[in-house]
Amino acid sequence: MSKPATRKPGVKRRRKNGWDIDRRSIEAEWEAALLQIPDEILREEIAFWSWPDSPEGALWCDLSATLEVFLKDVVVDAKERKFLWPDAKRLDLDKSVRRINKQYPEFQKHSIREFLIFWIQALYVPKGCSKSQMGELESLTERWAEDVNPGKN
Image 1 (cartoon, rainbow, N blue to C red):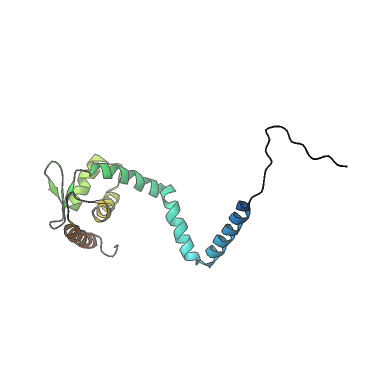
Image 2: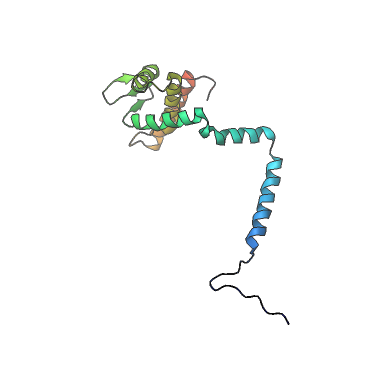
């Protein structure tokens, strides 16, 4: 006659649950789905998600964080294609790039320029705009960005 197994007091028995099986089946489904994605698209996705860890990505993130704060009081006149600085200076894109580069010489001018174009297209939101005004602003900034950076948009 065998004796039932005894456990130490306070030790719980480890039970298997359905989670292990479900997790493995989900992982298998993901793996099968990934195998159906063309290699070129997978390489692009991997490059996209690993970019912030690259030196270029880290520099862009630093530049972006710095300039978003620096530009917080800047207003855009999209019709005239000018940046209105808090000191009342109205500067075009190139003069704004030079102004920022004087303040932050560690950032290259072409990177600052690229960020300003990105900023007017995606990040700049003026206060108190109606939907129609925002639509007009988006249209003007898209044309501005296309004119200063043909073929990139």
